[in-house]
Length: 267
Image (cartoon, rainbow, N blue to C red; front, side, top):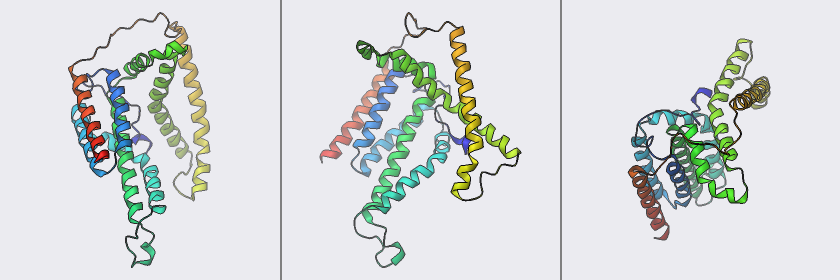
């Protein structure tokens, strides 16, 4: 299950999305998230789903990779759906069947609505990191946040911290998997017992993982100091980004999708 988490990973390639400007990809991802929360009904999700299909085709990354990354999140998705069904209103779907009388039409609709929204949200944001390297993501964040320098905010340091945190997710996942295998080799049991026993069994995993995270952070800090890293002041860039036809085409497509969703909200 741990190995199925793909959040934060980067897959090199030469696809349409790989060649887009990272700044535009960040902007479009923000618009994509906003559009998901503007969707009024399932027709809106059909429009966003069509957009997601184009993203999958233009990224060159198999859908199986992202679907595999959904497995560890299925508990959260189903948990959210359960409470939407439990506290939903409307008429009972099966009033004749006593033990199913708690299933309400509005609750089931809300549950399905939330499941589709969460899945599309995870899919869309995952393809950002799949097609954008951490270095490119850092530069894009810094350039988009550049106006905040007027308020004396350390823009470069903030972008660096966010990207390093994202980059360390796969590393910590691999470290967790190694610790679990080592504990299993010593006879630890993580799969049997009630929920409290399983939670208690995680303590031998969390402590070594925490120590490992601090050790890696210290090694990274030492490496940056050895390379005379002093923040963004005076820093030059090897590659200068510029918007191209791919970026404007993707922007036009996103504007069209948001416009269609707004029309659905109005009519």
